[in-house]
Structures are given as C-alpha cells and as structure tokens.
Amino acid sequence: MVEATAGFGATIVTVTLAAYFMPIDAVLAALLPVNVLLSAYLTARYWRAVDTRVLLRRVLAWMVPGMAIGMLPSLVPQLAALRGQGAIRTLFAAFVVVLAASELWRARRASTAEARPLSAPLAALSLLGAGVVHGLFACGGPMLVYVVGRELTDKARFRATLSAVWLLLNLVLVVSFVADGTIGRASLEGSGVLLGALIGGLVIGEWLHGKLSVARFRLAVFTLLFFAGSALLVRSVLGA
Image (cartoon, rainbow, N blue to C red; front, side, top):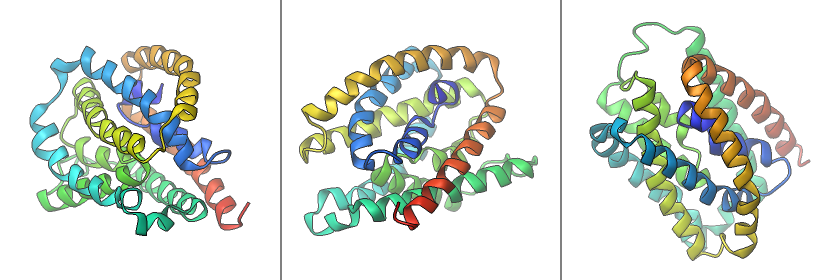
C-alpha cells in the first residue's frame, strides 16, 4: 500500500516491523520476489511516466556501484560475519531512526530552498549511500527520495521512475539471493503467502495515490518508522 501510493517504502516498512519476529535476511528472502512483482506492475502500467534521464544518468549511475559495496558481506565469505543477526538488526534500527528523524525534521522546516535539486556532489554521495544501504538491507528508498524528490515534483513521474529503479535493483538482489541459497523453496512458500497482501495493498495504494498528498503521506510513513525503529533499536541494544 505504501509503495503503490508513494513510490517507495514497501521494504523498509515491512522489514522494520517484521524484524521484531524474524531475522532480516529471512524477511528479505520472502519479500523481495513479491516486491519485484509490485515494481514490475507499476513500471509496466506507467512506463510512459518514467523519466529515463533521471533513471539512467542520475540514479543507476551511482546506486549500482554503491549496491555492489553493500552486497559484499553476502558475496565474500570472509565478510559473512558482518551479517550477524544481532549486529545487522541494531545497525538497521539505527539507520531507520536517524533517517526517519531527519525526514521529519526536514518536513517541519520545509522551505522553497530545500525543495531545490541538490548540488551534483551531494546528490552523487547520497545516491551512492542509497546504493550501499540497498545492497545491505534492500531499503535504499528514503535516501533515493532525498535526491529524486527534489528533481521530480510530479507524483506520477516520481512513482513510476522509482518503481523502475526498484525493479532493476531488486532483480539483481533476487539473483544474488538465489545464488547463495537465501531464496529457496521455504522462502518462496513465504512469498506465496504474501501475494494476498500484495494484491490488497496494491489496490488500496492505487486508490490513495489519486486521493492523497504524497507529502502528507510520507510524513505519516516516517512518523511510523521513527517510533517502530526506536523500539527496535532499544530492543536490539538490550539483546531482547
């Protein structure tokens, strides 16, 4: 529902809430194939709204190298310890809290100046960071929104372009997860269970996209993430 409405957020909302009950890698293994279906639908239906210049020259040019860095713990056996569940959950929770807090702070002091496109170096650094986070958690969306939201102000172009980004990048992650065995029969059974939620959320999200201000919806999403991420961080630090 969140991603069909705003163009991003399916993974970070799902992982933040599901991390209370399951390892992050297990959540991603079940979620990513379903999220690819969501992105494929939105991209195919609204492909005319995709801004190919922003997609190819801006986003993918920086996010792909960043994602390669973020995927190293999964691809290099010597770095596998970095994926330890306790450490990765704490790191993820801290990332969510900082990101949500920064988004809420920016929304509070929104101004014409802040809506302008970022400088080229800052945009490149932000997109590279988004790629690293996406390689680690498949949740680079908010950092990508930080850049693209200032260039694509039309919500239809914004959503379609981001859907194309998730389709391409998450296909790479799915192939990687299949290759290392993270995605297999058990995880695909979990993906099947999620299909009903995908369809229901997609229908609601398509309706909300035409009714709501995306800015207000994003504010609600980041408020939810801030409190959920804070509770997850406390739980992770205390070892619960």
